[in-house]
Length: 115
Image 1: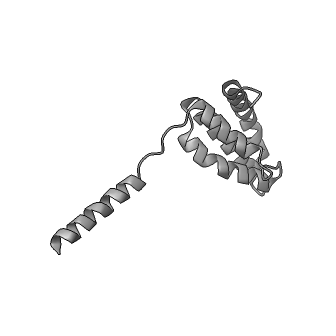
Image 2: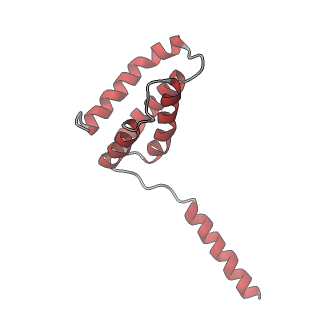
Image 3: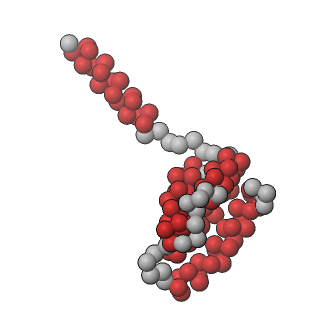
């Protein structure tokens, strides 16, 4: 009985550790493809709810994104988060606009304008 219990505990610990393993990092191409899928979806509208949905869908992609795209995606998510607030801080948005534009350009350089 003790051996069975020990085996079950060990198996549970291994399964728990496997579930907590790090997400593999995506290549630039994989990251671009996933972002393209999110932004081309019908739910990706320019209203506050649509921006919120897009930001929430980009978060898991950013977590596994390639090194080249992780920072631009974070900037885009932060801009969308501020824009989607019920009362966005217009001064903060104005400050963020240059970084948001630069992030979009970085994304375009890595992913190409055709993607």
